[in-house]
Image (cartoon, rainbow, N blue to C red; front, side, top):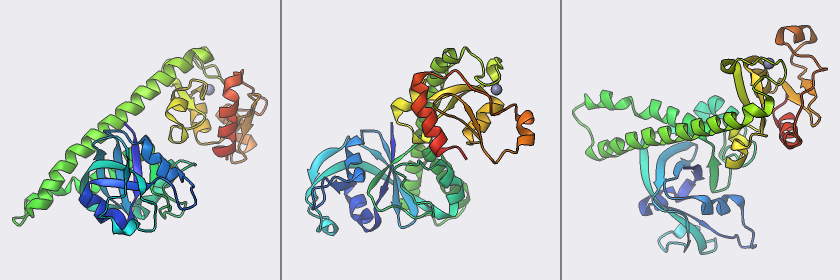
Length: 305
Ligand SMILES: [Zn+2]
């Protein structure tokens, strides 16, 4: 199961009424924007977060995989675009209380992917149509949506005048959130277990920097983080290095990095007098594999501070 974010604006109501998302295949110039092409990746069971004017307003589940389909005739607002498009049928679940992205942006910003982010650094939504939503971002959205929407049930059930339609919609939302959360967490857990299992022997079951070998203290650290990796890269044991908790935290936060030769680089944020405390020094070098090289370089270019 994969997650996506769709940026709908004024097309939201029409598309919700039809139970679809729809994009053209090509623009007038014959170009294929990535956010339209991504429609073809949507499979039955995938989850979509619907973003409208600053808010996530609904979650939906694809009831079938993407197919080619011309623009539904009822959708007037797409007039300026080509009719040939991609269509996904979905079951919409509207939130009672929309999630304002900007209001929680300090929690969202650090987990946005570097490439193809649905949101800009200032919290605005991007112009395209369909964006990927990595599992860590999906969990964050689900947590924030639950906080806003689920605890309200008991409170409002005490009130006598409950709008029946809204109540029905809320009752379908709770299982959707719970199932999505559980599927997303399972995907992360199984992925991490596989990654660790294949990574451990590559580093002889000990920290590449300090040789700590107590399994409970060892972390399979991704070089290209989960949020930025493709499904294949997430499981590629060469996309990482085995490190103890201390060195893993330093690597994860970009305070240390390795170059293509496996030499340690230390961020200027850490003062030299502290090197001993962190058990690091600029002369350290790890025995890297050829396949580690491009992942180490990616980390050094994008995560290292
Ligand atoms: Zn270590």
